[in-house]
Length: 595
Image 1: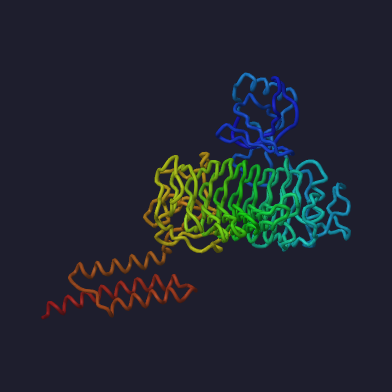
Image 2: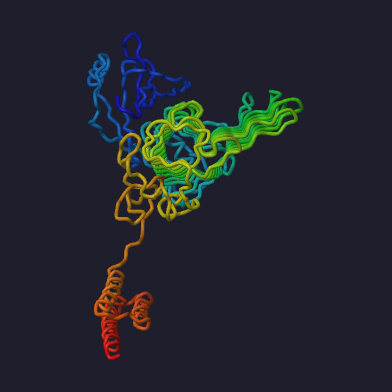
């Protein structure tokens, strides 16, 4: 079975039946799944599951259309029989399943749908709001689309902890596509009432062209006073996020003493908390933070995963940036007790499962310090860029640099598997396995600040002289899975001749340097005319006097200052300058011979 997202049901006594689960089949052969009850299927061969429905998520072109192949009952039975004898069958005849309903949001207000399930997105005033559209989609079957125009959509209905999208965060239960007008203009603001999105188990969701910001996941269940998870997005389904930004969100702080005598841990996943499958393309996760540990007899630890916390699921980043995120500090402890540790994984924390990065940049993230106490201070947070606890982190053509840790491992901590052509500035406290081909370590990639460098999302540009420019020489421009990477995060073509040496190789990281600006035909003509004049004069034994060169410089200034018909003046100027230079050369020769 191919790597990707599938719907399967388990086998019992060789027969298919029971609940249908969403699974992500990783190349390791394991089937990562979360059912409604959050149980995990670990199948070691194709014979352990029955294919019920196949979703093509391997590439995820982010075109807002789900690709699905639905088997007729008889064909499904034949395919299951093939699986029973252990023969692998390739699935190719996909058909497109279009959205059943399309809702066009026409109001930035935060109001509920007046009659969810009637097929019409309308609040009490007849307006279609984002919340009303999501409530309507949740009440209907099929795959729906929400078109979200430019505007700031601020959540204003309090009531965190509710799971029907009527209050607090925007709960999504059904297959849904949300299409924004661009992350710079379509902004979804949580106003710190709650996190922004909660993707529930079983949902297949695509979001593009939006900014998710100002979410806050606080404590809502007093049986567990750990800070809330996923300040911007809590994903328990399958989410693809493209051309979007998740920025300025926070997981909640740990509680103090309730009911435990010890402080509770800070919330995890400042930007995103992922439990199943999260695919990021051309997106930026920036400026998010996790909660601090609560104080108590023993202080609570700061939350892990400032940008992203990924549990036993799958996290894939392609042409994406994780920057400026941070983890919380540990809570202080009482006399003769211990303080909490600082949060780990300033950019990304991988608890288990699989994380894959291709042509991505992880930079300027940081971890919190341990709490102070009268008996023992907590450990400072490790892994400023990436912290891998027990999962598998694969990376190719990726920059991990300029991160800081209050503890060890400024750029990374734990085991990482290289697929070649990476740049890791500081490998202290991390073990790099796999293919070391053309990896660059111990050097500064010379990144610019996170800013608008063109394209849909902010990026770190590669400055002139960066060792990451044109550095993907011994590795092809492909993902870890071998698929071609033809653009950078901004949508600019890869590869480019970034160092101007007439060879074209991809750059490491999310940004592809454009290379020197080529001369225009007129600028090229000027340069060639100047060189020809000097050669002719020298060839006949003369010299080019400063006064003669000034004629050429004046012509150049005329060309640069006059945009209207400047090319005509320029061409005439070059010809005149050439005549003057040659004449000056002959005059100089005659003067010398006369003496």
